[in-house]
Image 1: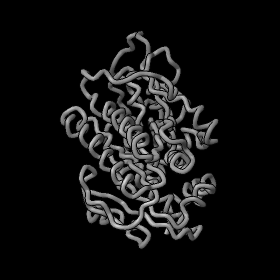
Image 2: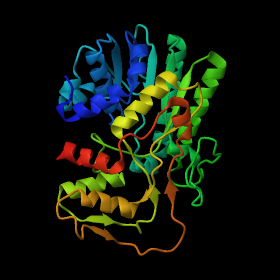
Image 3: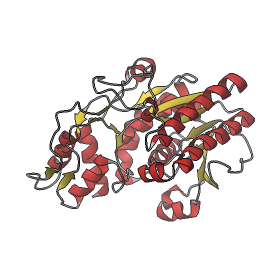
Image 4: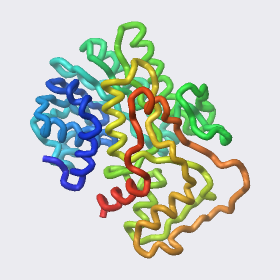
Length: 343
């Protein structure tokens, strides 16, 4: 049964992924990180397509605590989904055939990255190695890795967007480098397993997103702003509001990930996100405009310095030209949909 609040989005995903489901019919997919933001959208879209198109596909979902997750989201307790309890670094491999693996199991957590960098790095690197070994043993058709734009390191302020051939990288001595460097290592492991064992890996370098299921009370600025508006609070920007960001709506994210899984090339990274840039200040005003009493709802605490603004914007030509992927839902509509979901 489709989530009523998401039904239009799920129809949108289905309309833009028809060729994908022809490949998924009758197959078994292992999803790691299935209880997070990405995972919930992949679960929702899989269940909707599976039921609507009678695919007879099944999904195995790895979770550290399936009972806790299902108590909060009982709609995912259905015959087509089997939950596996375990840690991504050492879970017991399931019996039976697995056709595809979608590997999303890394929490994007600034506190964890800053305070427990070894745990963050080990979760990414050891978890990816464990998944790739399973893919080798099971001879899966493909593994989709949700990597990150963090692999590029800091984007030069004079570079409009980062394309996949940009040779950058983390400053490994910088606090918080474990996440981005871990993702670089994960991509390297995928390439090693491709060359050594013929394991096919698809790489999605993911940037920033908005939509239902996005946590509103963590470090995501757009989520914090939406929470402020839902609580009828002023949006407080602690910085100067000049950094540039872009956001892809979650339903479009699901379309992109399903297409990359099935149709992406082996070990050829695809940036996943929107290339429509706006400043954090402009973002705050856009979010505020969708709430009640928008006037004077935004306050910036830090004066502008005049220094070049930081940027975190993907170039998405490769995904568009090779996989025919595009941004279908504009940001204002994406924010409106997210507010409605949580309201």
